[in-house]
Amino acid sequence: MVRLILAGLVLGFAVQAATASDGYSPYVGEDFPMQLLWGDTHVHSSFSMDANVMGNTRLDPGDAYRFASGETVTSNTQQEVRLDRPLDFLVVSDHAEYMGVLPRLRAEDPTFLADPAGRRIFDSLTGDTEAARAIMDELIGSLMTNEPIFDNEEARQTIWGEITTLADRYNQPGVFTALIGFEWTSMPGGDNLHRVVVYRDGAERAGQMIPVSAFDGDRPEDLWSFMQKYEDGTDGQILAIPHNGNLSNGRMFGVEDSDGKAIGQAYATTRARWEPLVEVTQIKGDGETHALLSPDDEFADFETWDRGNLALTGMVPKEPGMLRYEYARSALKSGLELEAKTGINPYKFGMIGSTDTHTSLATGAENNFWGKAVMVEPGQPRTNETFIKSAAGKEFDIIAWEQVASGYAGVWAKENTRESIFDAMRRREVYATTGSRMQVRFFGGWNFVAEDSLGPEAVLVGYRKGVPMGGDLPSSPKAGARGPGFLIMALKDPLGANLERVQVVKGWLDEAGQAQEKVYDVAVAEPGSGTVDLEEASYENDVGSAQFAQVWLDPDFDPAQSAFYYARVIEIPTPRWTAYDAARLGTEIVSGARLMVQDRAYTSPIWYTPR
Image (cartoon, rainbow, N blue to C red; front, side, top):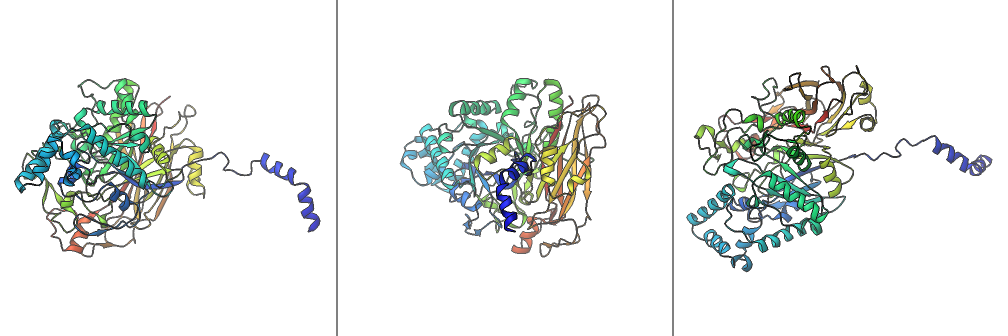
């Protein structure tokens, strides 16, 4: 034994050299994103004017960060609330319009009261009920007319400095990431063109420029101009995330620019540059697709809000033809058509979910849903009241039970830092869920085989042989080659429901240059809703599957046709938040209200472009 050890010592250098030359470690040079981080990029605090006038007068951005990172918080309705699991990151995205003004006025800040407009708002807020309601309507109405009541640049700079400093204070690299952001809230005539803007940077850079508001310009081109100025002036990085195209009355994903001209290469390039993501599901409706746009998709009609826009006088109903410019799947199809004409795809975006809560509380789960605003927190009349009125009559109103417990953003990152999360968003390696925390991987490539999904290193194989969600397939390796393969892995939320099915949604351009779509079932477990007990608001996981791992080959691939592919993973039926309200609070079950839900995930697409 001693002689053997000595021989090893003498020959140690030779042994090491031989091992190194053989490349023993297969992981050298690999740096793949292996952390799945959960977050919400769209939360409003008391610093948002509309949240404040609707009752959120107490919970500021710091409270939003504390709650998201796992602390128990007392809501504005004096109820204690806590997440089942902390989030990994949060963007407090208070509206740029009147950002932080109302909390300062309520606190009687002399700087804000010295402004005549500030004094008028304060006197109305603290006056009788009629005066307070009138000033609230005036403030909200000004968003639609782009005529601000209070516009004090010094005050805006003070508030923005406070917000960016708070984000830095709560940012804990490796533990919890507080991303700096705001919402640009353009809504001409009530048509929703809102974007959440997210920074890669800390307060030192982000604080140098006051956020642009819709009062400064209500066209998306105005927002993109600000973003360019920010990056040029600070050497920072920034991106924008559109949301609620379903409330835009056909304007969010159109084929014309803001001047009514057909989208050209310059517009397409600019939009693709600044908007790599779309928030595809949230409290105000799911935005993946619509049953009228996808009539062959049995799962298309999911938590749909499709009646009109956000006009102050009541939702202006939609006209025929608007829907196709409002939903993510149809926008992805339009992107293929526009790319064929201009050479650039303006709608080459990834998909995430977020809440758009105005309570400061990022609660996306069905069994812990805190609602859109304070007036619809648990215990309030939040199922049978009219939530949004329509100008066309009651049949077009949105009723409070139609709020959606949704959603969250899943991000595949290398570490839990601002830089790593932002970079994952930029490369679109992200996906949306409607509140569940299921784990989903989606890779595309030309050489995947069935066995690739079965091995212990399936994820590494996905990166080595293909591209992840959000990526582009390389050109087909040779003429006559088989179609692309997709490696799909899905694992149930460890505290949630089993999975019912995995699907691939494909969009492509046909021979006439028209975009088509098809949904393929990749794997389906035993479906069924018999395990749901609505009286108790409970369910059992005795149907469905805990996980799926599969390689799927496109059976209809045509190498001459541009295409996109994304995965949709659907859970078994479970109780909806309305069922939990009925069981826990004795809430009246409103006629027509949905009591069950099949939560789901949507991955970012993978694109194929012919060589």
